Length: 446
Image (cartoon, rainbow, N blue to C red; front, side, top):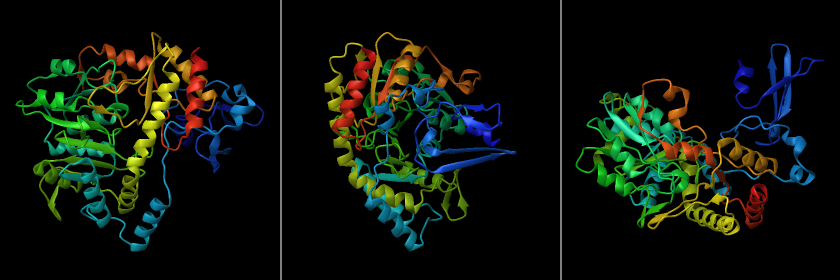
């Protein structure tokens, strides 16, 4: 079973002479810690830096190590995103451990409350409710809005599956709308086509760090008893018409996963200006309890730990500098790629301020196979380009082969899934790395 699980991340060969199982076509990823797997009487002994665990691996990349030149073998992998942690985060975590207060049965320990207050102030919202991860933030928001069986929730298919899964977990039906070809966010006209008498909520997603047209969605929802739950998992610090994301929608959901603009390892936050939603969210976070052992609504254990909150508070203080560095790296990337006619570069429409979680480009007029070859070549040059998302949610087996969701035509979603890929612009990268990424891509597509 362990081997079967491991096959998800790296393909294997079995040597004829010894029967030893060896990983094939593996990639530098984690570090140099040694892993030993003992499966029946066979052993697999390799170092962690030879294996890739993560969402950016498109599949088997043939003979990558053999195809690398000496310079590429010596160059450190330029990752698509990377946590930026320092002494402040370490000291904060140690202080929590020394305090002995690791969590709180209500989910409202002193560090969690401090992080919530600071995050609400940062985005300009009245309330912030910390939870265990971004998917929990979405699920808790849907439950707080009383979304359930018989309801429909409109959202993009061109996003991570967590939002659709959260809808399904409530018993409601996901309804997939199409995206705008330039911003990759929900297209208002497509949302309008999806609205029905069953529509209870709309989830606009701020993809790659660019705010969606939340105001347009809110105007559409106004007067129809439709809740707007913004998925801002990738958009910490982004702005729409001068307002920070997190202060506009009925509820806004953030993720603090390790690769995000700020991280707590795993974690999430919901912001809202509505007292009723804030109260419901706090109950949902803690088993639906109105007070200890007095449950009044469905809920879960979605508590954020004190260590996670302490790390998040330290990260939040650094977020403005992180965003500034991401913007500079994105601007430099645009400058270096601007004359490349084969690429469509990311746009920042008037009134929208990008947080540059990812720098996503699009190859003109290609199919998925050609796009994937370009991405493979970048990996060969130790650049961790990523494809988000090669399989839109509606095309995955669960949603494709069942009747748990509905959709109309999604031409822009399907086209984008074949042509886009993302480049790293995170704050740990300097000008030299950004120039190397841009120049390598220019040569690759020439």
